[in-house]
Structure formats: C-alpha cells, structure tokens
Image (cartoon, rainbow, N blue to C red; front, side):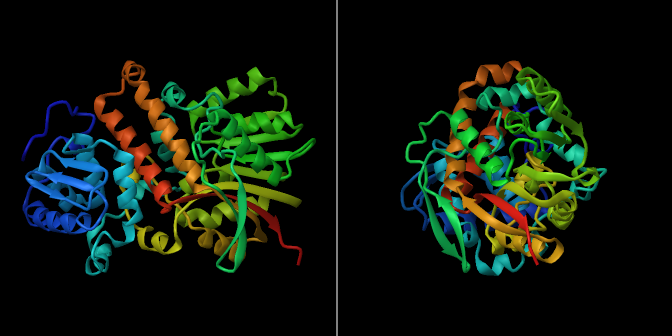
Length: 429
C-alpha cells in the first residue's frame, strides 16, 4: 500500500492509504482514459504530468497521478473528492472548474458505462437509512459539529439555506405549468442577512403566517424563522433533531423575547401531534431520504388544519438524474449529509398528488441565488482559517469543507441543481 503525506491524520481512515489490489490496478488506467476523454472536449485546462488537456478554462493540476487515478478508478466520484482532500489534485478556481464538470454531469461518463452503473457504484449503507432510530445520528453528523464553526461563516441570522437576493421575478411555463423564476443576482453585493430575511419573509407570506397563526416548523435551524414568525404574532412549535441547534435556537428565541410564543422540541417530524394553520420547512426534505418522502408529506397533510397552507424550501435536481442516482452512495453522503437525497419537483408533485390532499399552488425557482450564497459562505470560511484551526478542525477538514461548498456552488451555478420555494394548499374537491 502506498502511504500518502503525513499531514492526513488518523481521524480520516479512508484517506490514510491509496487503494491497492487488483481492482485498483485494473481500474486506474481505465479511469485515466475516461477522464482524459471527458475533459479534452471541455472548457478547462487539466495539467496531468506532462499532458495538458482541455479547451482552455479553469485549471486543474493533478499532483499525484498514480493516487488520483487509483482513487477515481476504485471509488468513482467519492474517490475524486477524496483525492482532493489528500491533495492529489488541486484547482486555483475550484468552483469554476467544478461548474464546468457539473454542467456536463450526465455526459461525462460514456453511455455504455452508465448502463453498468448499478454494478459499479456503491449503495448507501443501511445505517444511513432515515429510520426513526438512525435519523438523529445522521443529523448530528453534520449539524452538531459546532455552533461556533457555523457562526464563523454564516451571517448574523445564522440561516444555513439559500438567500433570496433582490432581483426581478418572471413567470415561465415548464412541463405545461407556470411558475416563477428569480433572475440571477448580478453582483450579489446586497448584505447577506437582508437576502436571508427576504427568503424567510416570503415563505411566511406564502404560508399565510400572521397574528394568531399556529405554526409548525419542521427543522429549526438556529431559530431565525421561528423568531420572525413569532414577531408576526404567531405561536410556533418547531422540531429539530440537532441538540446543538436546539440549545442555541432556544437562547436566540429568549433573547428576542419570544419564549412565550415559541416552543422548540428535540423531536422527529413523524412523531409530531396537533393541528397547525401553517407548516413551514426550509431545506429539510433533502434529509428525509427518498424512501420516506411519502411519509413526510402524509405527516404534513395529517397535521395541517382545514384551510391551512404549507411553505417548503427545497433543493431539487432534474427528475431523470434523480431516478438514475437514488441508489447511489455519494461523496456528500459519506462526508457531509449521511442519508440525504435531493428530490425533483416532479417527484414531489407525484407524491403529494398520489398520497395526500395537498397540491402545489405556488412555486419560485432561484437556484443561481444559492450559487451566490455558497460563494459568500466559502469566502467567509476561508477568511476564518485561524479561527477554524482554533476550534480544533484540521487542514483536511478545511479542504473538505471548501470542497463541499464549492462542489455545491457548482451544482447551482451550472443549473444542474435548483432551489425552490413551494406552496401547498388542499384541494377543494
């Protein structure tokens, strides 16, 4: 086995050695051939030993080719990300390079290989399935890292979801249905806290939150939405599975003077009881797992009072890619969000139509706003390098977090991913 540079600590066992054995021996040259074939037709510059490949654009440098191709050949996209964590490759403009790849994602791998996907890719481990016994551990893996860490790169609202910048909105028709699309933020120089407030207030407006409204929030975050709902005169029951978020959210609610209006509970959404005039959830459905989407929406349908409305902000992906990847274990699953999976709007629509009395009544798409939000987060995180180190996070963690933020930004900047605010109402028939 080939040992990688000593800076990688034992906290990262899968990075300690480069894949070896017959599978890696066979897969490495195949991975090199496929990678070269893919990037040579793209607007990028890849420096791989003495080879310079691509049509020109954001530069990637393969620093340790043998390791890079063994990791990619052995573990696919997980290996691609892990090779970045170990420094086997690097990029000056990581987000720019990944954006080019994300735009070509469905076509990067030859068609004949895509047909073998089920044989080659790893399946999600059973412990990541979001059963009532597993879900809390999955959530804790990410959200209980450290409130102080998140505070280093989020704005003062502590909103860990896409902001909505002040841009024009147009109405478009797609799949025979009309929905709203927010124009991309040109410079995104608006204070992030203002754009985050706009996102929250719009969702509360669509859900009909006002004086006397009984609100259920699924996924508390750090309490900003609950505080804003209470400020409107609503009473809020918010549920979370993150003990770290619960502690800080309760403190922020108390500081805002709304402890009498907001109750936060460490509780699985499936166990919530009661009746609510408005149900809101911001970027939580992605953590549910596709096996439980029906359960999630049926729970909301059960808890919604007559005449009530639902406001959900969700990260989405194209339906065909969702179908192709729903049994795939990804780098994001392994390192960032165990058990997570992104729905498509079509999947959500089909589930609520088949399993609930809910129907989508309003939809706003603003994916490019997420790209701008992620870029702000990454720049702020990079500037906080010394503070991150003081919190006890090592260099590998910093590379992982940078890769996560830029990998995500690339998805939205390329249009491969989107973020939606969806309003649901009950059918009248």
